[in-house]
Image 1 (cartoon, one colour):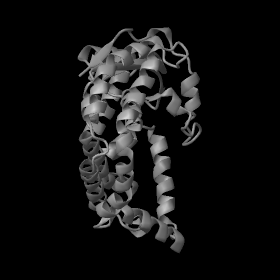
Image 2: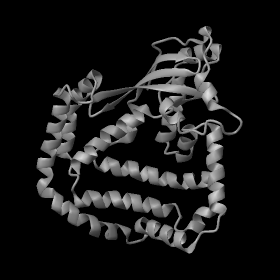
Image 3: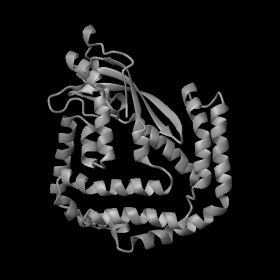
Image 4: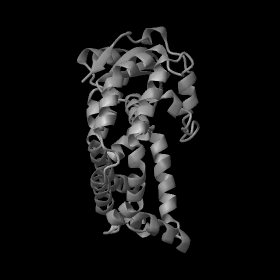
Length: 314
């Protein structure tokens, strides 16, 4: 369990740093330069998303993660779904799923399932930690691992902090698990959503707004286990390596366990906003009379070459 949480925390931290659009502080000079050539600064869009995340604005987070046309498609699909009559089977399954976390006795029910597993895992915990740390050291040292040199250096710097976190955090504590479950189940109840009919009364914007309380609770639950996503987000540094018309490359760096973890990513400009190149392939590239693929293929004019090395940080 500890090894899984350890891996998940690092991946999640990297995902925050690599999310599209990502986040950072922009400076006036960069804004003036990009405004003069008509090419938006990727760091501005990156900063907007972190502000949505920090504010626990789930609706805003979804809206900044996709072009407006894609969000309209999502709205349309949601409206079609909520206007369709629910079958008894779907109604029953939905109610059962929600009740698992929204029932007044949900924490006790969940703890009755989880606690025996915690008890069973405790005698093996120390060995699992040592194995996990050993595997990490092997990955750093082995030339056959998938890590590049930058990643090896970052992980090597992070090892002391990771080791301290892994050894000082009791992931198998029943009290901690109860606190985390209480936060999440209280948040689920606060949404007021218990049945499919409850969902059908809400627009997509309203549903995402209601669900923001669950995001808040999830962050609080992770803090119980020594992971502060807001703190990681605040540490983000974004360096703009290249902006060339409708494509860009940036390097994001976040501090995790007192060590910088960096990732380079490519961005594509669509409808005036920057999105991760890997995310773009999941968009409907021909919807709403806009061919997104033409944005990806369009070659910029030479004068639209953005200055290299511009960096923005909190």
